[in-house]
Amino acid sequence: MRYLLPLGCAMSLAFAVMALAQAAKPPVLFPQQDNLPRVMIGAEGQRLNVAGDRIIVEGLAGRAASAYFLLRPGPPLTSTASGRRLGRSNIHLGRARVEQSGSPAVLRIEHARREIRPGDYLLPIVEDNPTHEH
Image (cartoon, rainbow, N blue to C red; front, side, top):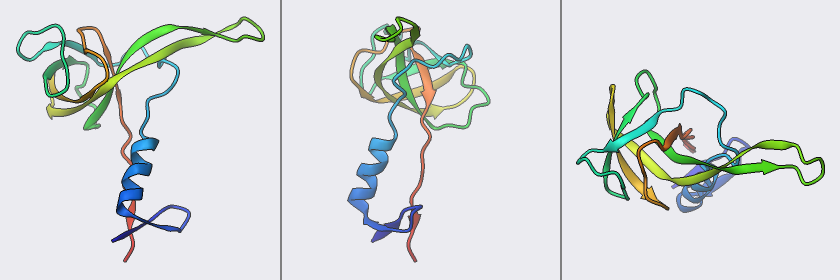
């Protein structure tokens, strides 16, 4: 099976999956939004969570995404040329998928690069679907 990209070139399924995985990366700078959803606690009451654990999240009500990046603000980034502050770096902690929407919502951690703690943030993953070639 082959997939058609927006530019009109065909590719194999394995290559399409790899391209989408690379495209779905969190931003380098931590988002400046005030209303990002946050991890409250692990579903079993644990404060440190890893891949496979379920987490309780506040602030997801009314959001349509089914998968989220797990983020933590990193150190400030400054321009070496001007010394001007550019923003905060983004520490990418992993990914989670919604299991139960609502307020609060329950998500399962699919991938974790670090332990997920209460107060960590979530950013929706924009999932693009390649068009099937007929």
